[in-house]
Length: 217
Image (cartoon, rainbow, N blue to C red; front, side, top):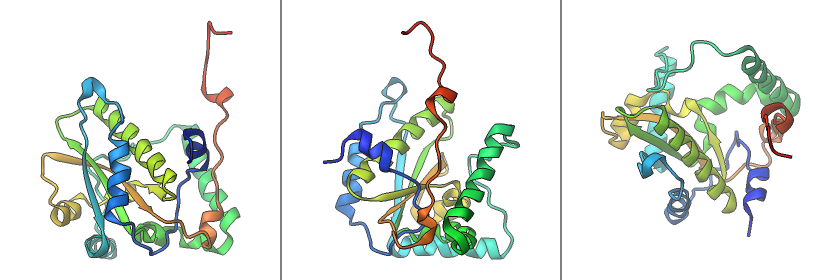
């Protein structure tokens, strides 16, 4: 059985999935484990919606139609107006790293995003619109729990803001009520290990650059 360290070390963002479906029981097992995630005052602020099969295909077709009609994506949680210089530099390194690792396949990066990475299912995380950044933190913790629980079961994941670009489409197809913000999406399925785009593995900042520790020897 995979331990937590192994799951943390092996989990990575999968940019191309096999078409093989993930069965309902496996998805429920992943979510059931992830629901052990802690939350502020035990608020458990998350509401989860999962799309797969024909429903997900309908959602993707609607996204593609919006894109072709030049309708701008407008997620419930907006992008930042600007990125700090250091973060912007790492984002640029991501694109150049994919190009270097994947070669010509890197040109498919945009298409794969638009096609939901060909994932057989997407998990959408929502919370009440009245909640604040404290609850957003809880949903971030839940996201990591989902991805680690998936890794233990041999599943790959891809967290991506593009999956929630058109919230009105998701509301109509998944019956998501208007009082909920659609915060994030996680594509889930089995990695296409033969696709060149998956050769890329992003580097992580060393702990010495990130953590400041004082008073502990």
